[in-house]
Amino acid sequence: MIPASLAITPSAYVAPVGNSTLIFRDDIFKGKVLFHTGGGSGICRAMTEAVMRHGANAAIVGRKLDRLTQAAKELSEATSQVCIPTQADVRQSKALQEAVSKTIEKFGRIDFVICENAFRTVMEIDTIGTYNTIKATLAHVHASKGSYIMTSATLHYDGTPYQAHVSAAKASVDALSNILVVEEGPHGVRSNVISPCPIANTEGAARLAPMAGKDSPYPLGRLGDIRDVSNATIFLFGDAASFITGQILAVDGGSEHLRTTQLPYPASVFDPSATLKVLKARM
Image (cartoon, rainbow, N blue to C red; front, side):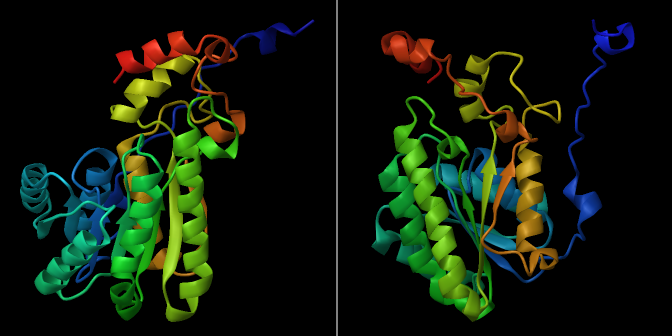
């Protein structure tokens, strides 16, 4: 029999969200330049803004120029730094080379590269896009002794129903980072991976996280916050991480250690048509 003193469930701890401007010096990235594929919206935009708030200028890359131009304007105004829009499809290496050339023409250097693509993209954009970004920027990152961050996921650590395309793509991104570590480390280049859990108030969380129910396990008491990813970005690009490379940082509040599928299981396997209807309803 459980003692009465142990039968009462205490209120779970909820981790605070750190404010990067209270943790890191405002000018730690002064004179640095960020090249970010997909940096115009959502988590990507928050990562760009965080790096800019600490002194860097930035070039954001995407296919929709009007959206990029507006985002660049807002980021520049919010941070008092310079952000330029560079239109390119990451699947096209020539277009990426042109985006890099525009960045070099404007800023003269590239120090940081974030290879980021939307959560639901498939192999062609995630894997080939990341490879093309590395190829287009590597000579400039060599020159600045800079650093890469790949954004990935934890889906492929275990089997996740109906996420074969994303799982394969993200596993490939992790592998590309590992190769960068050993091939480019002697040139002074670092590469790390950030793998976030569902982040509150983002498209991915809206589509997938609610299906797991309100009791989804987060040992630190909450879904991820965009600022959690931003803070990890600042740390990994900063000098405090100068001896950290080849790592996969799961920004997930410990949820991977209590991992369950985001979809009802095994019901989702027995009735895929019903699961597809739920997924489409959230799209």
